[in-house]
Length: 492
Image 1 (cartoon, rainbow, N blue to C red):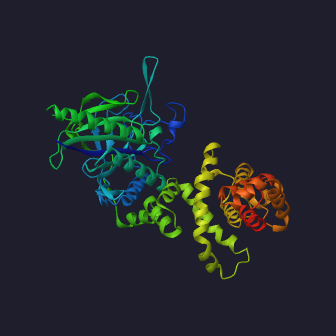
Image 2: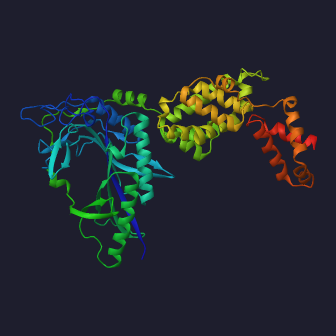
Image 3: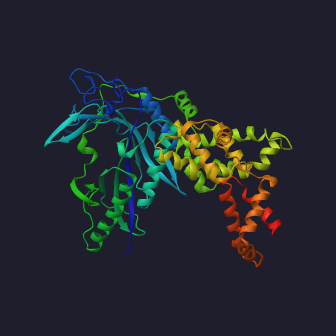
């Protein structure tokens, strides 16, 4: 018998608001000394009253719109009661039956993964295990968390990973979170069960915790599919819900405890916070703040600039990189107009844009990103501004510099900035295309390599490449290969 996986995700996104969810404490406590960004409210002192962070609410609405959800016109906070050392009040302020967002979906590949809800809650403190003791740092306690719950609608581990990666991009594009899994700014619990293929029944789910990377999510789900398949085949399919932890070293899940039900938390409305009415004006304002989504930009890059799907994906996987690429393309038109080409500015661009855009994608993806990675620089902080990069692309397009020299120029631009034309002049890297300058070198090369010339005459095309290589070496890479090939054929 074949079995199919039924997967749902519970995701917590740490919002980068200036202050915490229910108090005015600095929300950058994770970067500060332990227990320095705390107050009586976020440490649960008696007699304190929480106040709702309205920026967090606006961002919940914003993400709800980005994920195609229905924004609630009326919402409230609830108390989720449980005891744990990282929870000073003995309860967490969360949301239960009236979240800010209901439903929604996220497109992953050619499918829409449906969402159940999106709501806000406060984060717990951080436990630090050291020298046999457990210490509590309350800096993180009270940080706004956006919880996103999917329907059991994900088909396989790869799709789960792709969903999370796309969600991370959305958070970054909208500027609400860095959504870095390795730093705990995006956390995920995965729920999985199996059922015979074609059945619609839901069987007891296994919740997997301790997932600290996209790869961990994928591997843990793959492991659970194998483990649960074996249980089904042995007639021991899971009979109750269970929580298991992912062991990164052993690459397996380990049993932790039984899975809690909603009733275990004894939810009731938070008495210290008023319910919230969300009017249409507030929703429309959030719509006005909604930035272009990564999927939209990906499609636009393909349609507008002629990028391949793979090129568009790489260029949009980083918001700053996508902005940079567009700024470069925007500057290209201005540089083209300085070349004295025939036609209007629009006609010149229309005629040349396809090749230029391909050059932009090629040089950014294959060279600039490599240099940025090697030098450990963020794309938003590089010294090559879009105007200078556009000039660089035009110089390559005009064959003013060889490919080898262009790489040298780009490296120097990254280190010290400046216009590529100045660097080319300073370093003497301009490509030689003038026949008069090349003729003597070509004739000398033909004279010094008679056997290779004979081979070319007999139809061996590799012989021509050998001669071109010789001349390129002689000119230290400055000669134009096309001009050399033309002269060689004429002279031979």
